[in-house]
Image (cartoon, rainbow, N blue to C red; front, top):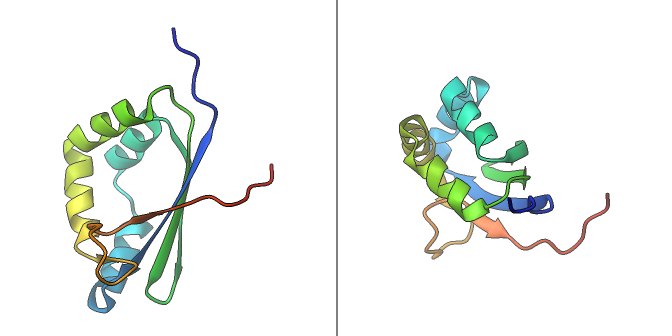
Length: 113
């Protein structure tokens, strides 16, 4: 058995469509249980989304053994697909002209345990 990857941290950023801001916040006030379970089952912990104005910043830690394989499992989950459609319609990439569908990944420059 392969040893688990050490905890990896991920940061991401996007903007909310102003007319969809409240819809996005309402969705996150009651995240679907199946989506939360899939996130947990695929090694994601400490998933947090912050908001200021129309900017959203996400943070999560991955504690599994194979991040890419777990992302495939997550993407195949039907509830997660519907969730991503609903929330994705509320989002824009952070940078104008970005080719990202919504969330843009951030580069970690410093960390303190």
